[in-house]
Structure formats: C-alpha cells, structure tokens
Length: 130
Image 1 (cartoon, helix red, strand yellow):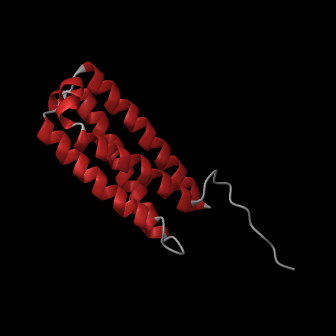
Image 2: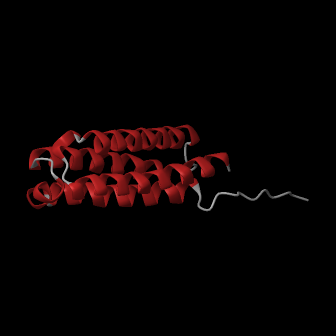
Image 3: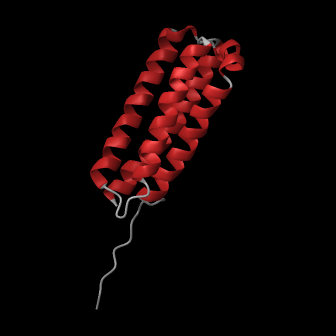
C-alpha cells in the first residue's frame, strides 16, 4: 500500500510561481505603459519607471518559465524566493530613505508592493518545504 504525503503549503510551488509571474508581469507592464502618468503620482522619472518595468517584466517571464517546468526545479524556486526577499528589503530601504524621489503615494505604493512580494516569499518557502 502506498503512503501519500500531503503538503502543508497552501499552494503548490508551480501555482505560487505562476501567480508571482502574473502579478509581477502586470506590475512591470503598468510601469512601462503608464510611466508618463505614474511619474507624477509616485515620484520617479518616467525613464526610471520604464527601466524598473522592463526589469519586472523580464523577471516575470523567468518566474513564469520556472513555474512551467515539470517538475518545478526546487533550487530555482528557492533562488526566486531569495530574489523576492531581496526585492522586499530593497523596496523598504527605498521607501524609508526617500530614494528615487518618491511622493507620499509612492512610498505607500512601494511598501504595499513589498508586502505583496513578502506574501509570495512566504508561499514559496512553504511550498519548497512541502
């Protein structure tokens, strides 16, 4: 008789990576497409927002690709969680120091997106532990 183990993670690693990719990709595309509007709202100049958006879009493609592997490469998934954790730390430093000339709305936005990414880190670590 086979014994099945059940994961305690709320989502599978594949699902967490795919959700991360969608949210990150949409965020990146919004920065690129809306840079000239968002610059006044959140603070950084449009070229800076475009650069951040292109980075996020490329990262989303990588994360999405990682989520389509069968099986999902556990080491790659852990590296993605580590990069996400670094993004959270960097975001909080930017919000706290006023780097990138953030407006008040911009600071709030950076903290909110850092909280969302923290959620991805937690889900990814739980999924990696199985």
